[in-house]
Amino acid sequence: MAERAARELALGRAMAAQRAEIARMERFIERFRYKATKARQAQSRVKKLAKLERVERDPAAPKGLEFAFTAPARSARVIFELRDNPRYPHLTPVPYTVLVNPVLTPLGSEQDEGWEGCLSVPGMRGLVARFRRLRYQGFDAHGAPIDRTVEGFHARVVQHEIDHLDGILFPQRVRDLRNFGFEDALTGQMTPMPD
Image (cartoon, rainbow, N blue to C red; front, side, top):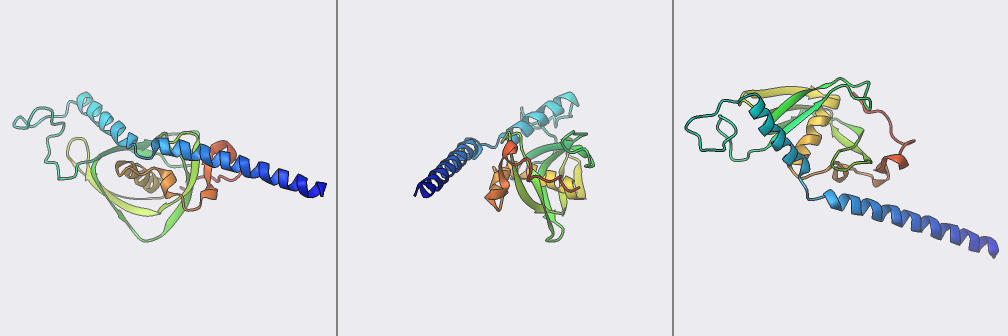
């Protein structure tokens, strides 16, 4: 009888700890769910880049227009790069890219799973499937066309950043919530990112 009571007490404590951890995650994610933080940051960086590089403006354009090229109906901007980073020492760096009005085209259905994190959701990691190969198109800060075919980590970075423009954070892409949580709780579970 005492043994059963001890098991029930231990189970109750474990369930309470699990509920507390779930509530902690829910509060954390809810805080960021509807914020397109990265999109605003990207727009700010594009503006700074335009000023630093003295992007020529169209003299006939209305005041405040940042770029001298015709903007399609849906205008979105994203900036991404990955230089040498101690978190990803084995990965090929992703070049600094300003990508305006991005269009992504997956090249095949093959996907890789990889552990992702984000500055918008600090301290958390999740296992996310992304297309292995893709083509992305758009324009740079000067209006010149960009058309690249990439794979592996570069493709993952592009998909992650474009998600921000659509108001999607990586936790919304996690398929199995057992593979999502605070970094310190997942230490033994996380594997290196595939290149």
